[in-house]
Image (spheres, rainbow, N blue to C red):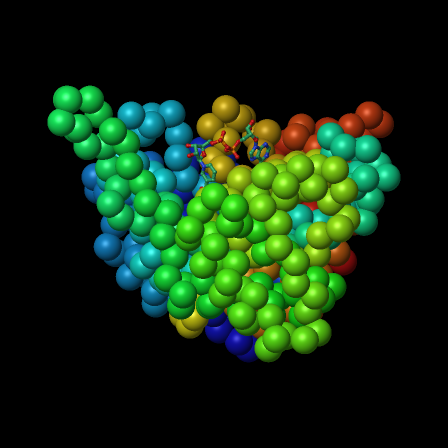
Length: 360
Ligand code: NAD
């Protein structure tokens, strides 16, 4: 029997609904594969603000540090949108990433054959798309200083953020990019804005410098505006993309939509050592929270990624991923991925059919 301590961060909005499904799924595969999960739950985001005044209480971060992996749902909601920035739910998420040293965010965007028609692009453009976006997570314009809203000499306000990367920050994320490409299709596209930004020129130079260490990886470079265009024009040209925090934030959402639904996409955030955080790409979907409409599959697939990347239980991960494909094959769809002729279900019913498939 293997024992794992997992910190659960359900967060806000649909978070608790979809987290409950992932926990049930983990319990079932745990029994089947002799894995004992010790779950401990902690507040983050809006619920943490309500309880403690802070979006990331010290105790939550401590519990995360003392676990084998962290499973996060989502944070945020209208209620907290107008608080000062340091008290916003998003600040908790940034603090968690920084506190655990999670500098690499892996976001797969893979077209599932059962969901091709849910994509807004034509079938022949998206069929077979399988992209991994490796996004830098703890640097760039989200963290660079100076930052803030300052008053100029004329009394006018001026908002400032700073996009900055050091050589070592670029090198470590580029390495993750190259290594990820090695495990996949052997193609790495580095995305920057080197024609305008100095920070991007340094990025491009460092990535290019590392390339000879990975002779089995074919490296290319794209400016971010072109990359955005190419993603919707002919996404199959991409295998692995490596990029900075801001560009990765935007491009991974664009890549997500190729697959039809943001409700299907998991992600992993990894550091140099210590526990990783596994979470859906989507947010807390406050517009459908508490209505049993949420698609729990991205959360479930995040749990599968956790088994694969953090706990080294690939067989259990495979079982979950296959079960997800099977329920789609059987025609079950939540509203966000609904198409003609399919059977629309809510979050709870999706969980029931998934657990049934997993139990056999
Ligand atoms: P969102 O991803 O929450 O929602 C975008 C749209 O997709 C909404 O229409 C929503 O109903 C739908 N959607 C998302 N997940 C779904 C699911 N599992 N099943 C069915 N439909 C789903 O993004 P948003 O509306 O821009 O942001 C809402 C809140 O979430 C904000 O407070 C934002 O800050 C926060 N947010 C959090 C994270 C995170 O926790 N990592 C990420 C993005 C946004």
